[in-house]
Every structure is written in C-alpha cells, then in structure tokens.
Length: 155
Image (cartoon, rainbow, N blue to C red; front, side, top):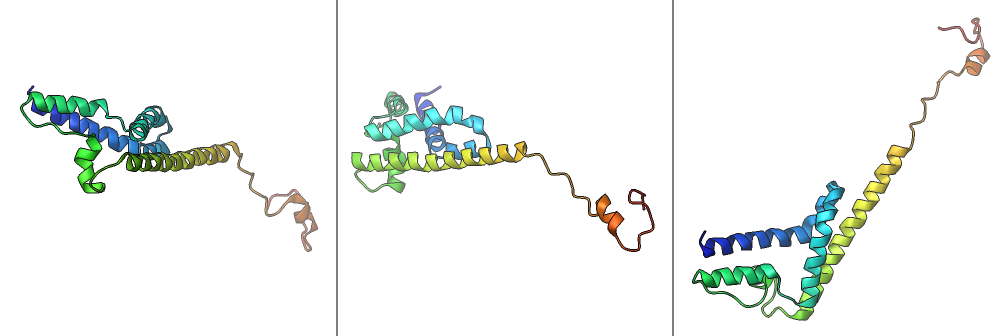
C-alpha cells in the first residue's frame, strides 16, 4: 500500500481517536463499560495537551507523508488539521493547557452525570413496589351503614 494512503489512514484513525477522547464520555452515559476504553484515551489526550507533547500518530503520519514524497508539517495533529478551524493562529502551550482543562472538565461532568444516573437506576431497581391499597378494607366494609352482608362476603 502506498505511503500516502497509509498516511491518510493514520490521519483518519487519529481523528477518530481525538473525537473519542473528547466525546467518548457520552458513550459512557449509555454504556458504562465504554469507560474502560475511554478513560485511557482521555488521560492520554489530556497528557498530550498538558505536556505539549507530539502524539506518536502525528509523527507516524508525517514520516509516511515524507516517504510518499509529500510535504510533512510541524506541530501537532490538532494544530495542523483542526487548528485552522477552531484555534487562533499560533497555538500556544497556554492555550493547550486551557484545551486540556476543558477536555477534562467536559468529560468529568459527563462521567458524574453517568454515575448519578447509574446510582438512581440502582435505587429504583432495589426498591420493591408497594402493594396496591385495597379501596375497601374488611373493617371499612363491615362499618358501612346499610350493609347486610357479613364483612368478608364477596360482592
């Protein structure tokens, strides 16, 4: 497979990873077991943002592009592909820290909501339904005026 096609595939996998790291907490809301995949992805993405490191997928993509005779790029994946749309020119480390904090805050909020939802579901499953109340308990039937039947006689 040509290196340019491989570089495009790495870019798509990288994009899918970034989207999962950012929005994967929403999946946890529906499927709690997704947290086993999402939490490591979230921690990795937050570390990359906080440390200012370059993700290995970016390095792989750039190398494949250079081997294919294309031009590589400097900086990170988000800065190169998404930065033009979402971030102002000149992505700084301080801005990366803010983005990392937003990433963690958003997902923390989603996780807290998912945990709260699971706890509430557990409580509703644990609570036994109350038996229906008899609108005419035996004592009330016996005390009704004009009743000529014995208290436990069916109607």
